[in-house]
Amino acid sequence: MLRIGLTGGIGAGKSTVARLFEDRGVPVIDADAIAREVVEPGEPALAALEREFGSEVLAVDGSLDRAALAARAFASPERTAALNAIMHPAIGERTAARYAAHAEAPIVVHDVPLLVENGLFVNYHLCVLVDVPAEVRLARLLGSRGMDEADARRRIAAQASDADRYAACDVVLDNSGVPADLETAFGRLWEDRIVPFAEALRTGRPAAAPAALCGLTEPGRADRHLARVVRALGDPEAQAAPVVSNRSTRPTHRLRVTPANAQQAAEAPARLAAAGWFPTGEGAFASADPGAPALLVLELPEG
Image 1 (cartoon, one colour):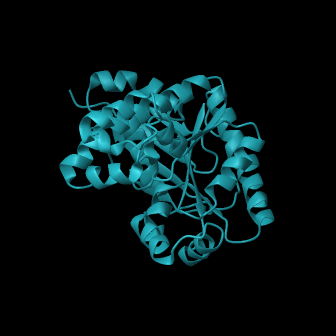
Image 2 (image 1 turned 45 degrees about the horizontal axis):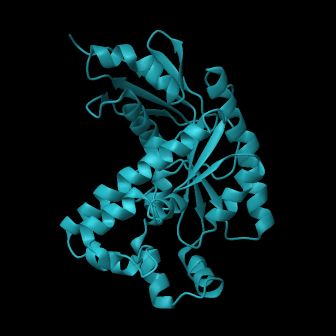
C-alpha cells in the first residue's frame, strides 16, 4: 500500500485535492473527521473527557461543548497533556481501523491538517502539500468562509511556516490559480509519480526511471529520505551518515545508514521494503519513488 499524507494551510484547498484522489477511487482518511467522531455521544473518549474535565464540557444535549473543553484543556500544559492522553490514543485507534478497512487498496491518502506541525511526514511514503500564498488564503477565508480577519490571521500564523512545509513535503501542488490548473497539475502527479510508485511497491522493485513531474520539492529531500529510513528501521538510535548528492539534472541522493544492533540489521530488508526501499545488491537498496531517486547502503554495526 502506498501511504500518502495530504496537508496544506487553512484555506489552501486541501479538500479539493482530496476529492481528486477520491475521483480516482483512492480511499481518503480524514483526520479532522476522525477527531470529531471519537468525541460523539456514546464514544469512550467523550466519557473520558467528562471524567477528566467535568460535566461542564458537555452541552445540554450531551454533545461536546468544544469551547468549554478548550477553556479547561488549554489552561495549563498539564491540562493539555491530559487532553492529549485521551484524544491521541482514541484518534490513533480509529485511524488504524480505517487503514485496516482499506488494507487491500493499492493507495490510501491520509488527510492531515497538522502533518507538518506534528512531524508526521515519516509515517508516509509520500507527502503532498496543497500550497497557496498566505494572503490568498486570507482572502478566501474572509470571502468564502466569512471569517473575522483577526481570527483568520491568527489561525494562519499558528500553523507551520511555508519553509517548514516545503522541507517536510515531497510534492507541492499550487492551488493559487484556476481549478483547471490544479486538476492538470494533479493529473501529472498522478500519472508520473503516484501510479508508478504504487506499482513499484506492489511488485517489490525500485523505481524503473525518474519521473518528470511538477512541484518536486528538492529542499530537504535527502533529510526526508534519511528520516524515513531511520523510522523504518524501528530505532531512532540508528546512525545516518552525511548525504552525498550527485548534482545532475535529477540528483540521486546516496545515503549510508548503520543499524543500531545485529537484530535491527537482520530485520532491515523487510522493514525497508515496507518503507519503499528494495535491494539492488549486497547491502544496497534503491527507492521505489520515481520522483526522488535515491540509493542506500546499509552497513553492519560493529561487533
